[in-house]
Image 1 (spheres, helix red, strand yellow):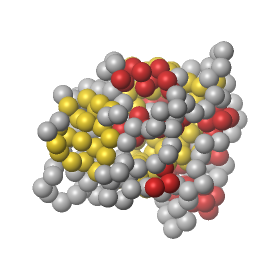
Image 2 (spheres, helix red, strand yellow):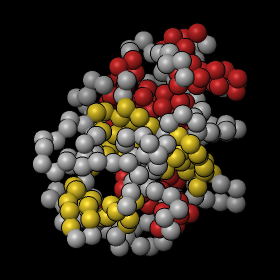
Image 3 (cartoon, one colour):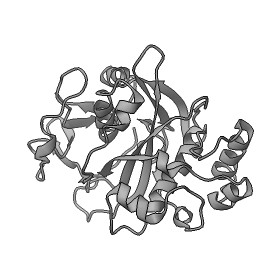
Length: 290
């Protein structure tokens, strides 16, 4: 997995970003999450299995872009009352969801051919989203996005993002697929299987993804998952240190974190085990330390 650290230089300013955790109810019970595998040569998290997402683009903040939430509603839901770009983050989440999974979150059904054409225009032709929506009389269902968490890349990493994680129910009947450009594979996994594959080193889950999967392992249905949204969303910034085992990342609820979030120390996932709070980076893999 591609990632780089600088422990001596000044910290890079994080760029705003949005990530979408698509969920669906699994036949026979349980929840499945949609993952895409990033191309190995991508500079940030290359080779990792992640949720669809990316950085905020300037066009995402256009006030004229059609959606069912206004700026005030987005700030309230995001719990960032002083953030003038809150609505843009919702739009970025919906746009990245379309580009990286082929799933359009819209207020009314849109036929598969139109969705495919929109995705191609956005991802390949690099056309702005607003005019495309207007041409097809489509309004984004921003209300379908439920803010879950906010992860800030550690200061030691050379590429940093301030990423808001959103939950979204996959519209019934839609088929999610990777984009074949930045991503090379995709799959639906229930949380327990995703964690087991990561433990077996069959897939790479970066720490914020791993923790999100752990949190969602508590849900038996999509409705239960959507209800896991916390009352308070605070920025979560892990710290990176070095040890004889290699590079270690410590999450905010670890005892060694300087700003330990005491309210999260007792959290457990569906197996009854406590959440993992630290990871070792070695030979291109993040390994959970229990």
